[in-house]
Image (cartoon, rainbow, N blue to C red; front, side, top):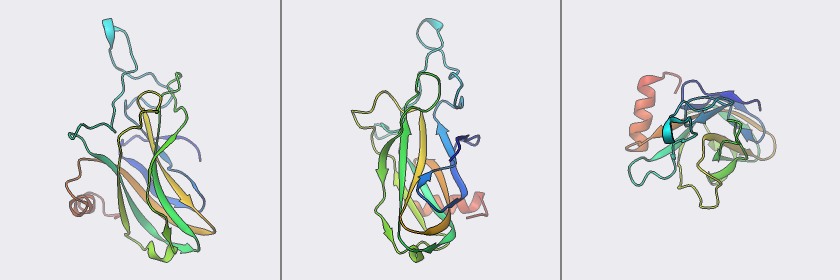
Amino acid sequence: MAYTENSSGANLSVAQAVSASGASTNVFDVTGAGAGNAPNMIGNAGLATNLGTDLGLGQNIAHPGVLFTISTAGTGTGTFAFGIEAAPDNGSYSPGTYTRLTTSGAKAGLATLTLGYTLYLPLPPIPPEFAGLPRFYRAYFDLTNTATMSVNAEFLMNPPSIKSVLDSVKNFNSAY
């Protein structure tokens, strides 16, 4: 899939057609600068420095995660799993190698993934072996066999509960 910068800062996928394993259409850049651009941050002694933001180590203050919603029901056979991946800046202001941070259990029988089905995956702490702080985040879809569906994936911070998250999304976006 082609890399597309996420201009809204929250939507990783909007009614993304999924018929094979792959990454979300959009990527979340914690600096907001966009791939290929230096972050507009001032560091030590007034020099431009890639500081970034660590979304995975909220210290019980920030609780980020991704809300997945099926926007077109699944058809076909096989299993489907949702995941979240992160990558550091590669030194040229673009994503380096992505690391899978978390994956849902595989959902067997795509008929269970009906229109409006939702799953919230909290973002875990960044593993110690991760090289630097992640700058880029994306959703990832693991699909086996032959199937199709459409998925929305939205990055959220501090959802009080999945019910209130869904109520909020419905109030702001009639597509849900």
